[in-house]
Length: 293
Image (cartoon, rainbow, N blue to C red):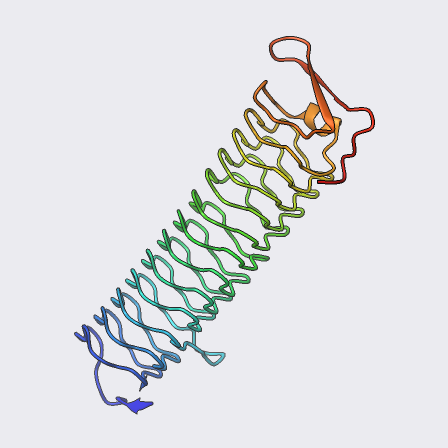
């Protein structure tokens, strides 16, 4: 890359500058303004970008790879709307950074710390996010389709309206979260902890919910059609107005342990007998199969 080893880049004004292919290895770029700069193919190995403004920057192929003694600090960095598609940000510290509407599609984000970061509307489709830390981050409306989220921490994260289509969320802790309007269609949620979470109006079409923990979750008006539900824990879950049509391997005992209303749509192989306004009995229909769509 182009050598700028002698330049002092702290607080530098590099707005809209073409920095394509530059080598920023180990540079201190604290509070530098790189908004709308062209950074494609630039090398930021070991660089310090704390408080830098990279909003609207074009950064495809952005590299952040470090040795054992160096972790790139990008705390409080403004990356709003930045194009970081396929960027390597592994192990970076993005605590408190603004990545609203940023494009992180296909990016390498393993072990990245996003604590308190703003990622609302960001595109993380297909990104490598294993063991990333999203605690207290704002991911409202973000695209996490086709991501492998195993080992990812989402404690206290804002996830309302996120899309996790075909994502692997196996054994991930998503308990006590606001997951209203989240799209989990065809996601792998086996043994995922969703206890006490609010999944009102969530979409779980064809989701794998085998042995998923949904006790005391709010699934009001959720769409669970064709979901795999063998061993799903629905104890005290709210299924009012939920759509469970064509769900597979759902048992009367599971329904009986949950809360339903007369608008809850159960699979064709189950029948609800209403005893009173709130009490019901669920049983299998004679000759109906529960293990086929």
